Image (tube, rainbow, N blue to C red; front, side):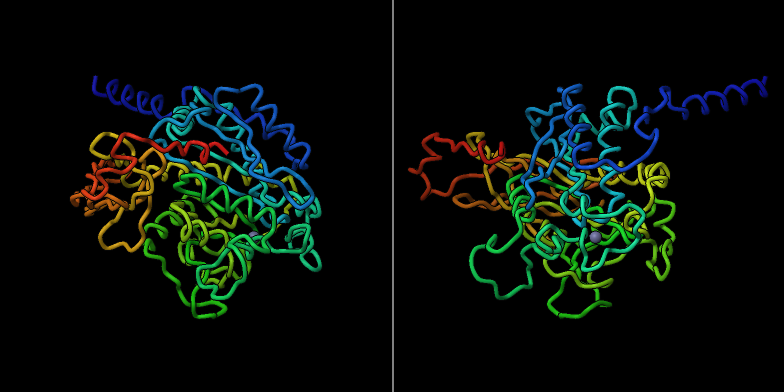
Amino acid sequence: MFKILVVWCVLYKVLQAAPSVPENEGFLQNPRYYTYDELTNVFRKLETENPDIAKLISVGRSVKNRELWAIHINSNVHNRTLLTPMFKYVANMHGDESIGRQLMIYLAEYLILNYGKIDRVTHLVDTVDIFLMPSMNPDGYENSQEGKCDSKLRYVGRENENGVDLNRDFPDQFETHRAGTIIAGRQPETIAIMTWIISRPFVLSGNLHGGAVVASYPYDDSNLNLECCRESKSPDNEIFKELALLYAQNHELMKTGQACKNDNFPQGITNGAYWYEVKGGMQDFNYVKSNCFEVTFELSCCKFPNASTLQQEWSINKGPLLSFMEAVHWGVKGLVLNTRGDPVLDADIVVKGINHNITTSNRGEYWRLLLPGTYEIFVVAFGYYPSEPAVVEVVRDKTTIQNFTLKLLPQQGNNFMEKGGTIDYKWLWNI
Ligand SMILES: [Zn+2]
């Protein structure tokens, strides 16, 4: 009887562990890289065949007028459900770093084809507003060559059509002199992405590159003007490290820290500036100028490996890509409303001990990525009394909800908001 019981228990465990439905990964047959036109067609088809969960958007255009496509995936893709966090992956800003580009196409197909069938996918698509951009530099990609592991002469392919490295073209927190507005003199691709980042309440982002295998976290730059070898820590250094580790430790090569010749990254991660300083990078821009936390993932030693490696790259990166997306739920989220129940836009969420505030969306939402622990959080907003501090407990793999109600300052008593007016900022989010 005991033996039967043991066998039954083992069987039950095996049956429980096995996925009830096989994953659909039909997109992996005959692996090859897609051209710009093929990518456009695949994304159009995904949108047409899955209009309820997929929407194709263009964030802007390249120098040669190619669209900067992103596919938007969510179970409520036409009207983001309140408090659903926004996530993005941006790949191929260096046009000759190709793995991330093709992985984003696979990821889009994987999520869409397996929605409603694989629990992990269904949960992601139901709870995260996902944006996948396979190429921020489509012109550079078209100038690149499969099988070439290093950049071409004069960085043709890596750079955009105007010969500019897009990951050196963003506003930099340590840059002291620059004439004109924040977008003056910048490339169309950079301006498009800057506008996207600033105008949308993204929470978490991955920036996909190649040429090494490592997860690199902010800051990329420092005020020391060194080439390398000195950490440049952001106020959220601890969580950035954990986010980088989450990807690296789920990636069987990255976690060794020695995937490529000369690589030596303990645990497969590095502070960006410690590795080498990057001025004008996209990663720092996300964190410094918006609410979005971005981590850079370098995915392959060879920048543009042969397409025969794509199946292997997908299988090695699928888990890390999904886990990193799920991390968008880490920490605290909630609504900031005034005493009449109207959303308070642009309120600052202050976490005591972390010198980096994030702000509320036009619907009064906030998402504050935090590691497990106890935090004191309060809210300040123009025209309102600061909120009482709330003591908030953050636990692993669960989002803590903490709402705040703000009271108007007396001198604001006759203003527009007090009279019941509301400002429609919706247009800003619909671009
Ligand atoms: Zn790169």
